[in-house]
Image (cartoon, rainbow, N blue to C red):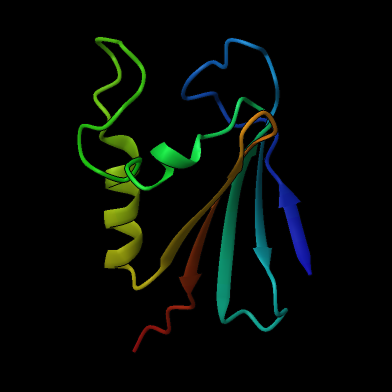
Length: 108
């Protein structure tokens, strides 16, 4: 399995507790047919009652003028448009992981 962590990406949103983000790109089968981008944190996690709604447009638990609740909605739409899958795993109190799985593209 190939893994290249990208620890020096600019933060899109600062985490108040200062816990680290982890971004990794993998080729799980080693054959180049599916690429997986994993984004993980060690934050508070997403409660199960919110997990089913986080991909809805305009849904956010944050009260902010800067957060409109469209980010994950757009991520899912873009991933689907590339015939990929988006999966989320979260454990309250331990953090969350998002997996973007994209098929290999063969130009004709």
